Image (tube, rainbow, N blue to C red):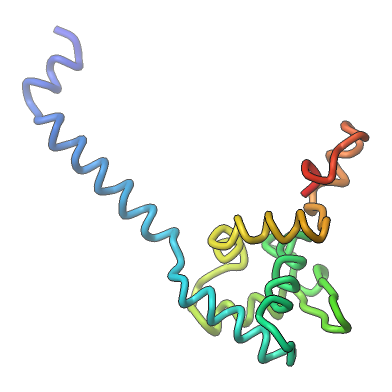
Length: 146
C-alpha cells in the first residue's frame, strides 16, 4: 500500500487542507501592516523633518528605502535628500519603531512596495543593487534599474 493511501485511510486530508489554508491566511495577515500605521509613519516623518506635505515625506521615505534603507546594516550610511531635507535609514527605523514596536524598515517597505515602485519610476531613483546588475547588463533600462 502506498504512503498516500495509508495517510488517506488514517487521517482526513480535507481537514489537513483546511488547517493549511488557515495557516496561510494567518501568515498573510501577520505580514500586512494596517494602513493607519503607514499613515502615522509618514506623518511622523513629515513632522520630524518639518516637511510641508506628506507627499514630500513619502518621497524621502521612498528614496531611503530604494537606496537600501531596508537592509539590516544600513543605519546612517543610507540617506536621501530632497529640498534640503535629509532622511537616513536609521531615522526612519526609529520612527517606524516608535509607531509600531518591532516593525522593521523592510516590513514597512514591503507594505508600501507599490508606492515605492511608482515614485521611484517617476523620480528615476534606481534600486540599490542596480549598479551591480549593470556590470553584467550595461544597457539596463531605467525601469529595470528601478
